[in-house]
Image 1 (cartoon, rainbow, N blue to C red):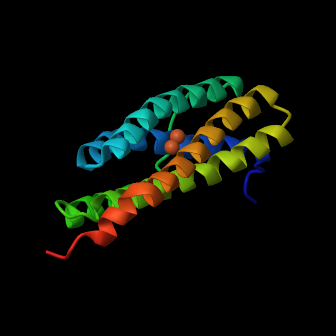
Image 2: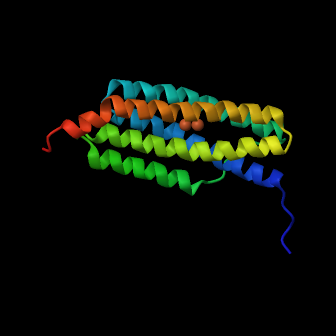
Image 3: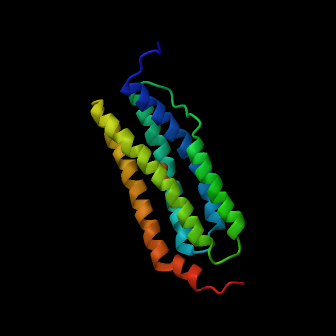
Length: 168
Ligand code: FE
Ligand code: FE
């Protein structure tokens, strides 16, 4: 029979998944920033890179709380999401649809993070780890806010630019 595993093990496993993901995101954000043409979008990527650095350190605090070393576990999901973002960059480079595509790729990343942090926060609560719960909640709120800000930016400017440009 398989060795018994608990919610604590699942929490640790998922923590390693999002830790890997955050580090990949940290590498992807500057590439997205370089590709973006809208100034507000560039600023949004800069701001979120700074936040992402904090997300990594908060996760390291959570690893400490559970007495484990901070070690990522390969997350194929985030690799796929980031690969698709890179495809958008190469396929839409130089077109007026690029920024809209970058926003949609960035939102796919945020939504992945939101599911992970939502689950981890709930498990932290169920496991009675209130400090970890608070740290995870902070990051979750920043991910959700980023998602909302990207929606606003898309509605305000970028989608309009993508729609109104004449096809070359
Ligand atoms: Fe994050
Ligand atoms: Fe994020």
